[in-house]
Length: 361
Image 1 (cartoon, one colour):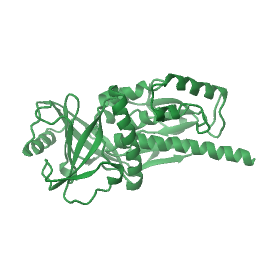
Image 2 (cartoon, rainbow, N blue to C red):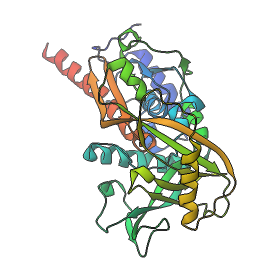
Image 3 (cartoon, rainbow, N blue to C red):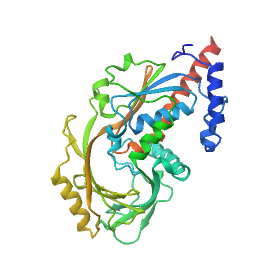
Image 4 (cartoon, rainbow, N blue to C red):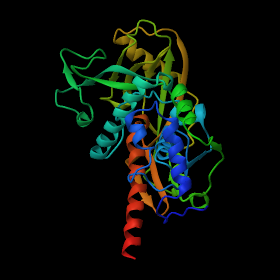
């Protein structure tokens, strides 16, 4: 049976699908059960295609599937070939705007990632103590999204006069991206999309990151080159992440993973076709900044690079049957669950408007 973008109401197929999911998720959290069990809050089932298989696309697909939709992800690349696979992936709202929406999205993601860390160790999410460098004691703009933020006494280990302390999730992309895919009923389909208008489905969600420029002609989208070094743990504390984003030309962060340390970084405006071959001089500079602070990471294991999809403001809006969800800069993992929830809300709003129009008719 065909579903259309303007349709409303739930048929027996949709109710049966949601009932099966409810029976199969008895071990899930209250939040998860609330979005799979039939209720008046449940969205009408639609055929939704999510374009893009980075953390934004996969998270959006998982949330929409939980809401009762039939979801298909299509992408030119998946898994370790995506930009998300290269990310340091610590919860932190870096290079993302506008502040008020970013704070709401970030807090929602913080809550969900914290739950995942506690209930799904296989998802690659762990909670770390984070210390962020600061020149002043004034609260940062993102303070409202962090419930346990506090000012640390004394200087920051990377050299700043002050530091803010908080608890945040750290995500391991090599575990988390496959875990997200495993939550989907339909496998990711690998193909390159040339036109959003040609993509099948009642709704198309555009989560293509930097690829959105070719699909939308968006002039505000900018590539920010990032590079990280992966080392053995050495003498780095395994439960404490350090960050210093005061000078974007000389970013410094040390993020422990389960079996390695991520050391970064940089944020260099670049053309979309910039080579992703790591720059040895940048690697040396990143490691030198950390060692100069008295930290002792272990042997260098690998160096990876990627292009962050930065935009002056995250684009999260509906345009006809397309919902755009891209431009998250260096905060894809930080914003993914919050932005996915807003996509879900947009679809539910369409249902409500359609139902109201039918009643008036």
